[in-house]
Image (cartoon, rainbow, N blue to C red; front, side, top):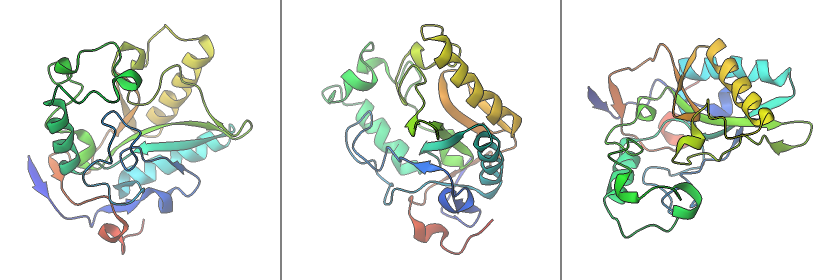
Length: 216
């Protein structure tokens, strides 16, 4: 494992996959902490070139079926993960509990694996996303919100409607077909199977200047 500030292998998802919708939650205050997260200096998504190419293939496939991809998060700098850890260790700050972890005691988030000192997102080939229906012009109802801490977020959860489960499986199968692997506890989370930097955690902030000269 090593840390790196080198962003030369990264590209902007908005440029590589121009049809995606970006709703970068950690740039906003609507996330499980309730503040903008350290390291998110612009509301953009960054990925390794290889992950962006695979994501473009997934997007192309879903566009033929009437869907666009909506991105909540992609590359996540280590400073953001450090912010998560500091927050998790403060039991008094539960501002967003009702939205993101109503069933859990905050003191159990680290032992339960919901918050950790390292994230695959910091390696640059992981993306959090959902489907957007181009017919209704609405985000698809997946039966549970992004970043909900609990079993409702497991892809195979059956406490949802058949239509919601089918939508989860459409996203999952498309991403798998295009070279990603899922996380069994989060329906929105996918990592490139052959990660470009499997042992490297990056530290540069999420901003356009970091990858300004990079192209696919």
